[in-house]
Image 1 (cartoon, rainbow, N blue to C red):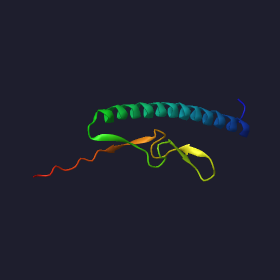
Image 2 (image 1 turned 90 degrees about the vertical axis):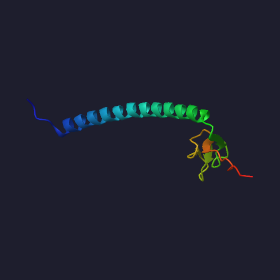
Image 3 (image 1 turned 180 degrees about the horizontal axis):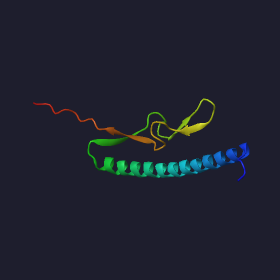
Image 4 (image 1 turned 90 degrees about the horizontal axis):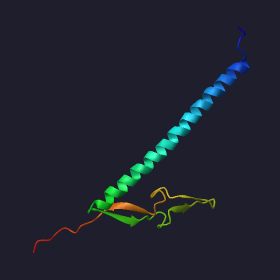
Length: 97
């Protein structure tokens, strides 16, 4: 049985690293899928609630994109590119006459 060289150890570590990177990528895909499903369910729930209303995102002004100082554009960090947010409706308190 031959002794392992430093190169053998490096190759083993590279294989382990690549395996972990593949696992991470699969988990990220699954996490994104779950996030999308959760957001869809929340949207459906909020649409059914009488005390919630959709308002235009004030950060991106309803565009879903925020321009950056360097000229690039990024998805709005407040609405996530949806162009709106959900807010609690304000109901005037009933006054007694």
